Image 1 (cartoon, helix red, strand yellow):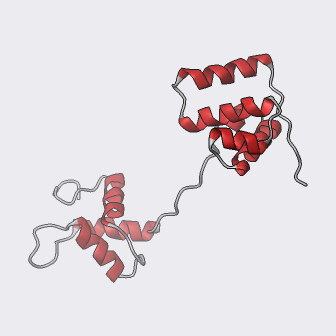
Image 2 (cartoon, one colour; image 1 turned 180 degrees about the vertical axis):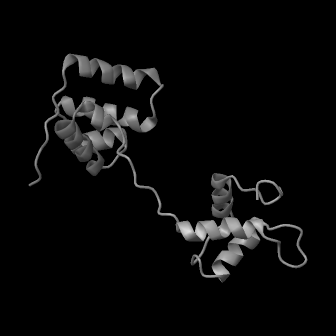
Image 3 (cartoon, rainbow, N blue to C red; image 1 turned 120 degrees about the horizontal axis):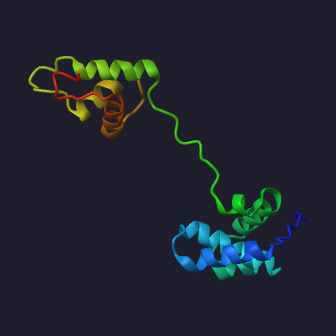
Length: 151
């Protein structure tokens, strides 16, 4: 049987959680976690809390555990997420920026994001990449496909 975490809130914590659920300024996720903790402090079963708040039982268990192990503030906040790994390494990024600064292909006035993305795949710098990823890369580096000054 899984370990049961008992949520014990001080009066101050309970007041803070109740005001958080009433104000309407916090994110929906934070309000849902606050309600979960308030119901858990009333010693309700995880299944009942999950049904009342329309969330999964595992979510209730996780919120309880974080509150007991790390505190109320940690249980309310989201953990940082690692994010997606970049599709292009530093050398490939530099190559794309340099490519955007070169003369465009025959019959074109300038490089389009689609042309750059297709060229990256053609040169096997990445298995696939979207024009939006190219746009963000050029924006991050301050490059402009149309300006002669900022290359």
